[in-house]
Amino acid sequence: MKIAYWIITGLLAAFLVITGIADMIKLPEAVVVFRHLGYPEYLLPFIGTAKVLAAIAIVFPRFPGLKEWAYAGLVFDILGALYSHIAVGDLFAAWIIPAAALAVVAASYFLYQKTQQT
Image (cartoon, rainbow, N blue to C red):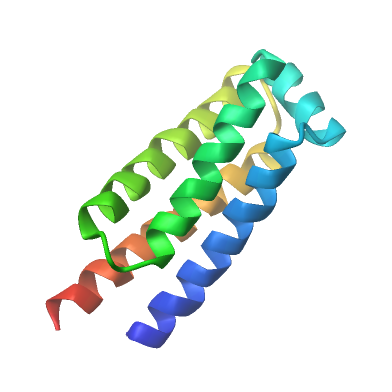
């Protein structure tokens, strides 16, 4: 169970750091997506920083309360992204990444809870 947790959580953390840095530096591709969804560009570094901090919080076990908040924040962020893609009329191909990311967050959290019970 712990091995599965660390594999899933490691992949999630890597995804968060990569996309977080892309948002923080306002990578042109990230700006295009943000504008398409109707969000202001100045919000990108904030979201990116939050993603990187969430990745750190879910990887380090020292602060379990902070980890819970990080998971909650990720769910809100990713649900917002998923809803935004649907709301602007994007096809399934555009919102599959947020849907998959939400599934990975759920799997990581579920496995985290299981590892805490033993």
